[in-house]
Length: 125
Image: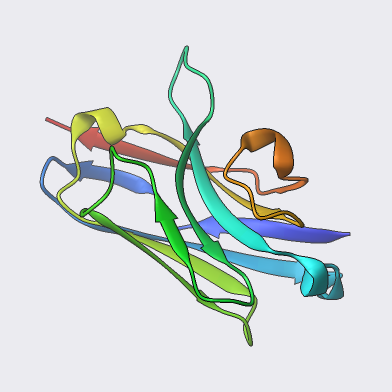
């Protein structure tokens, strides 16, 4: 099965920028029928929530209202990677960020079968 590996998390100050990356490894041909790749996040004591998504083979990007205008999602199909550029970070952006892949055009957590292990992003005030 394909594995998703995130990188780029860390501790930053409010207002700083951070770029998260996600690479698909292993049985990458599993991605051939993916429709969407996305980033979700989960803060302590909260449910996992949608952050941003990008269509895997067509044009289309989607953002949560909380990050719209501050984040940009991009992909490189040849390298099987997806990235999330986050600017003007806020303390409320602190969470574990997960990369995920789906065979459906969906922004719902339940529609994603492929998940990375997560990378911690901490924004200090």
